Length: 482
Image 1 (spheres, one colour):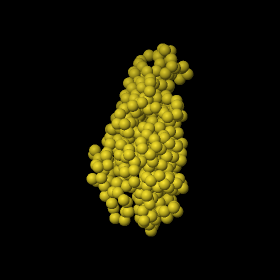
Image 2 (tube, helix red, strand yellow):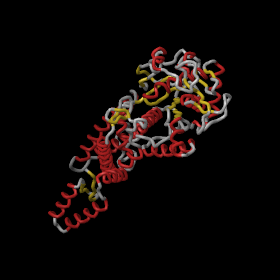
Image 3 (cartoon, one colour):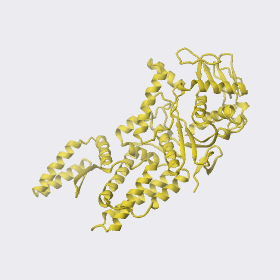
Image 4 (cartoon, one colour):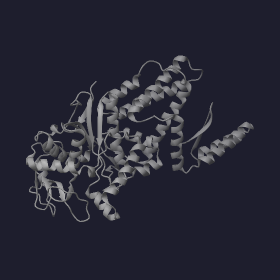
């Protein structure tokens, strides 16, 4: 079965066909690192992590490049406010970003290039564009891309030049010939980092950065490019124009990249979450309150092309669902220990593969997993000794859901370890002291041992009233936060 994606360039759902058989060259636009990553960033890179994981699971050799923009107006402003060097400030937030992505379970990209480390490549690409007549140097030291020189401009965003011209303007200090043109190189200004170039000292514009880093680490054309819907215009539109003109055929978008994917936003009260709007939650703050894997499950519960609404209540529900997954696996592992799984990959594996082949439909995979967990629980909880075939079925269930989980980035921890971690986050949110709970459980055990069942029940009921549910089983008594 082919892998089908919703391709922004063609506006159709179509098969992803690699340029070189068996290999995918994938570039995802990375963060501009002037502050801590927010929940919207987490959604973006969980999406691209899923894409990479599934493509690799389907046998593709994927080269995944995701950049850091560490030279940018926002970084410079923030650094000046703090009296810091802009590149050093960006490096600190890039390191923090990597830690946040690791916590979410994202695989590291094969290459994570930084703008500050690719200035020579950027200058060389701009020089090529000037030489070919797609760009021009202004008298003030800026270099601009001539939009009208590229016939395919605006195709990705489904906009024509007349529509774009109505909203275009020339800001004070700009020396562009046409309001549609955009900066490739900005002349040095006081308080900004700058580098030497044929046009004088300055720094890159935003859009040229990704073009140069894509060429440096993937070559062109590439198979797949990803980003948020807000990047379709102008960033990706300009990236196409630059790259196709510098190293492609100079006429068509496909000479830079064959297919484009764009994800929806994380919203607060149905408005896009963003730093500029000030309505964002940092990943650090969210991961402090909720289990990181539950946050990942929250992201995967909505198709990547759709918006997703954030709230603590929704994340708490995702955490409860994750807890149920691990409780089931812990139970199943105990029952099926030492048993060989029945058959090869089961229905849930096939369903997951088909769903992800169809435009990476993670919610459909989670629905299939939910059915599998329900069936496994019913079998595991059936009274009486388990027949060998039942134990083999449960072993197959555990094998299959973990295989699917490898692609989703879920249920890969040891169940006991995961359950403790989830419980700790939930207890902290509710103000529950785990040590105090454990002391009450010891008290309850002593009461039951003394056959003072009324006292034991009273302790159980008191804990439940505080949000603590206790479970008695063959391995002893444990607890969780309701």
